[in-house]
Image 1 (cartoon, rainbow, N blue to C red):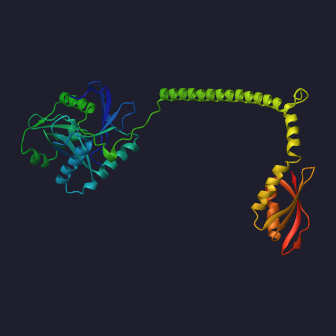
Image 2 (cartoon, rainbow, N blue to C red; image 1 turned 90 degrees about the vertical axis):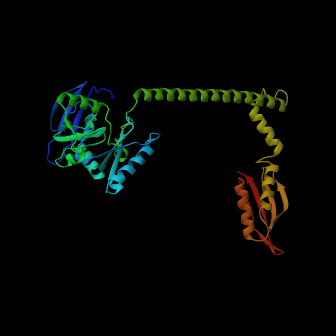
Image 3 (cartoon, rainbow, N blue to C red; image 1 turned 180 degrees about the vertical axis):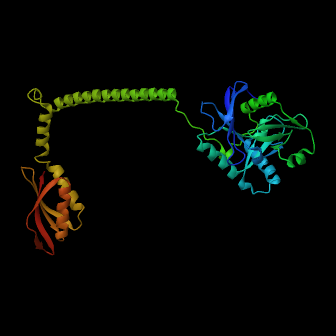
Amino acid sequence: MGRAVTTATLLFLPPRIGEPWRWLRIAGDAITARGEGVPEADGAPIVAVAPADAVTLHWAALPDRSSAQAMAAARIVAGEASASPQEQLHVAVGNLDDADRAIGVVAVDRMREWLDALRAIGIDPAVLVPAPLLLPPAAEGFVRADLGGQAVVRGQASGFADEAGLTELITGGGTIETLDRETLERALVQAAGAPALNLRQGAFARRRRREIDWPLVRRIAVLAGLILLAMLAMDLVRITRYSLAADRLEAQADEIARQALPRGAAETGGTNRLLVERLSRLRGPGQGFTRTLAAMLAAIRATPGSEATALDFQPNGDLRVTVMVEGDAQANALQARLRAANFTVSAGPFESTGGQLKGELTVSSR
C-alpha cells in the first residue's frame, strides 16, 4: 500500500480550453479544501492530474530487471495499439506494485501544452498522473467518479473518460459502481501519496534543482584552509632547511678560504676579497689569460677560413691576436662571436696578403 500524504494539492488540468482549473488540498488523510482557479502557493507539493480523454492507458506484464527494458517493452505495446507514429507519442511506465504495470500513452504535443500552461501559472509539478488512476481498481466490473469536472471510469485493467456510447462499448454492459464521496476521497488521498503512474518521465522528467549544501561547503572550506596551512608550514620548514644549509656551506667556504690563504692573512681582511685578489693574480688581469685565449680559439674554430698567427697577452688583461681570414665576412663573424662571449673587440686595419686578409684584433674584458 502507498504512504499517507501529510500535505499536497491535486490540480486538475482542464479537459478543454476555456474550462476552469479545479483543485483539492489534502492534509493528513483528508481533503481540507477545494476550489476553482489556481491554488495559492503554500509550499505543498502539487500533483497535476491529466484529463482522462487525453491519455490512453494499457496494462501489461513488463520486465522488472531494468527501467530501460520496461520502457522498451512498453513502447512495443503502445506502438501495436496506436496508429500514430511512435515519435509523436510519449510513453510512461507505472510502478512495480502489481504483476501488470500501467502504461500511459499521450501525445508529445499535449504534454508540452500541459507543462507550458502549468509553468505559465508558476507551477512545476513533480507528478503528472492520468485522472483514471486516481480511482481505486474495481474488484469486479467498473467504478465511476467525477474528477475535476470530468466523469471518469476505471476497471481492473482499464481507465478512460466516461462518454456516452464509448463507455457501453468498453464495459460491454458490465456493472458500473459510482463511488460515494468518502470512498472517493480516501482513494484520492491514497493516489496522491503513491501515484500508480507518473507521466513526467524521459524527456518530460522534472529537472531537479541542486541546493547548496552549506554545511558541506563549510567543511570543504575548513579542509582547504588546513591544506593551505600545511603547505605553508612545509614551505617554511623547507626555507628554514635551505637557510641552515646555506649558513653551513658559507662556514665551510670560509674555512676552506682560510686554508688557501697564507697564515694570518684571513685576520687582516675579508676572506672573499683576499681570495678574489689571489685568483686575479693567478689567472691574470681581466678575465685571465686562459679564459680569454679559450674564447678566442673557440671563435676561430667556429669561423671557417680563419686562423691565428700571433698572440700577445698584455699586462692589463687584453689579448692581441694577429689573424688571417678569407674575407670581410669571416672577420666580422669572428668579432661577433667574441662579443657574444662577453668580450670587447677592437680591430686594426686588415691588409690583403696572398689572397687573404691579415689584421690584428684586441680582445678585452667587459
